[in-house]
Length: 261
Length: 308
View (cartoon, chains in turn red, orange):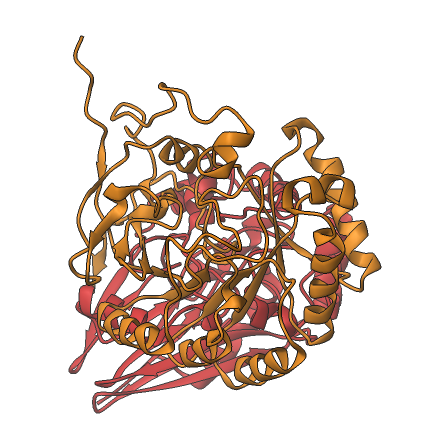
């Protein structure tokens, strides 16, 4: 028995990358497409994401950003502690809230935060940050394997798939268990490349195969639209250079050392 | 008049395990130290590599997420480098240091271990203020220049230390202080400094320096109504000393902080009866690294689920 699930991480209003990823996924053929939350943020024209999600039948979960936008909260609940990170996060949040239509906010409000599946003998838990907290950052370099084993045991699951950090990673655990951070479509992952990523999970005979799939899209066009929308130059620089310029203080040293900022 | 008992906090999960690895021995005598560490304070002793390794095994069974090392000055413990190298096989490690005592060969060893590990090794270097005029009256004469040299050596070795400072300036001038801090660090080659500002804890030496806590500086049950308890250190942490397992790194001097001999024994409720608990409540996540500090959350922490 074989089951293929395409997992999309934070879209952050990058509808151009989303469209490209969905075309690629359709060509490959999958049983299901999931988005693990954070439809808006960072990019331009947040409403352009929703028709694509509907057209391709994407099953969506609610991220912290979706909870905030859906319920018109004061901030994105991203959990930044640094004043510069919070400054840029608030610009992004205010823009996204102002430009998300009421019907789309209604859509975000009713999304479930988690989803469970059983494929053959494998139990899978999909969530946004972590199974216990929607805005918990699980970075590769600050999350011990023992902790992930504990989470899987407590949650009675074999596979945990999450996003929220914006950087993909995968750690196989004992007893055929796995943790997968599916990365994100919204912005490059601080590697100096313009492409973004989605993740293909293939479940066959009780085994999981994880494939991280790069998505090339028209980053220059996105940057132009961000400029027209007067989004910060720092965001545009990230889209074009592939290096993070904001949200830096939350990065652990290993992840931050990869970039120049 | 009846006094309401303090609210108790349960350990939700042991995510962070701290080690008082150098006891209370320090080469400096900072006037704001909340456990009065000094070159002569041996009320808590060093932890050996063997003792730490036993705790790491215990911690692995409990699914601990990350490890922190403090003192005193951790690098006065002659086994500190070996302890960090051993820890990076279990999970991420953070060491809180004043940056004034390490040797180049230790940094070389740690650089290699950090490179080979999947986990981050974080240095948190304490400094106070952006000049010797603000730092040295608190931390001792000449310590400002020595700490800056220590930061410079770390940066040259490829590390990105988190510079921590206790807020000894008025809150209103914070942005200006941080701007000067960054400029100063840039001058010694640290062009993208990571900063963590800590509130002062009015216990230990700091209680002598300032007024200490008032009787009303306490957490009440009413204050916890709707409060995100994950902001409290004791909600997800414990600390190992040479005496046993205590509730949190701040309170080890208090007799009631010692909760048990094993990590499992110490997983019991703790009453928030101290003034320092009030500071922890006010500021949140004061001991945790920014990469692990979760911002407070509006919604429930255990969300409902859909099943397919």
